[in-house]
Amino acid sequence: MTSTGRPVPYPEAARTLLRDTIVAAVDELVRSRGWSATTMSDVAAAAGVSRQTVYNEFGSRRSLVEAYVRREIEALIEGVEDAVRASHEDARNALHAAFGLFLKLASDEPLVQVIVADAEGGELVRLLTGLGRQVATDRIGRLIVEVWPQVSVADAELVAESMARLAISHALLPTSDPQDTATAVTRLVGPFIDEILAP
Figure 1 (cartoon, rainbow, N blue to C red):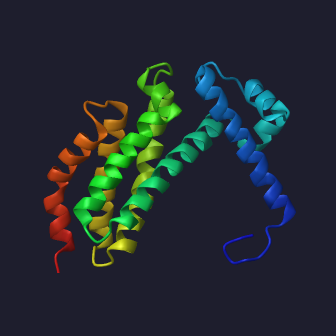
Figure 2 (cartoon, one colour):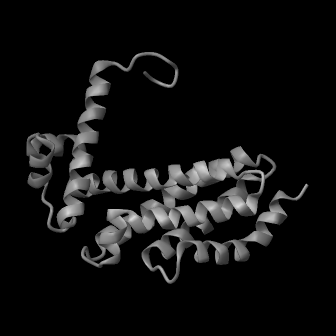
Figure 3 (cartoon, rainbow, N blue to C red):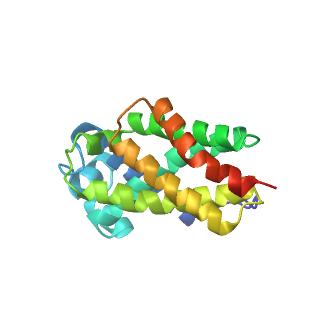
C-alpha cells in the first residue's frame, strides 16, 4: 500500500523488492569482507540474481554503493528523528538525545566500523561525508521546521548542516563516549538553539 492507501502496482513492488534484496546483499558482504573486496559478481551471487540484473538496476558499482550508503544513513537518521520528536518540548534535551543516539548507532554500524578501520581507502569516506551530509542536512532541516515551526528555514538549514558535519566527524573520529560528546556539542550549540526558538 502507498501512503495514499492505494495498492502498489506489481512491477513497482517487484522492482523495490529486487533493489532492496541487492542492497541487503551489499550490506552482508561489507560486514564480512569490506567494500573494496566486493565485486558486482559477488553481490549478484549473494542476492541470487545475475550480474547483468545488478547492472540493470544500479548502472555501476559506484551507484550501487551510493544506494547502500544512503540506506544506512537514512536508517540512522530515522532514529534521530524519533529522538527529536520524543523530546521536542525541550530543544536542548532533544539535541542532546539525538546527537548521542546518532553517535551510539553509528558506533555499531558496520559501514562506519569499516571506514574507521581504514579498510576501504577514501571511496567510502567521501561517500559517507558527502552523501551523508546532504541527506542528513535535508531531513534534519525539514524536521526542525516541522517540530519547531517558529524557526526560519534558513536557521533550520544552518543548524542541520552544522549538526550533520559535527555528527559525521565525531562518528568517524570518535574521541570520547557518545553521551559526553553529545553534552559538549549541546553546550556549544545550545545558545544558538535558544536564540532561534525565542518568542
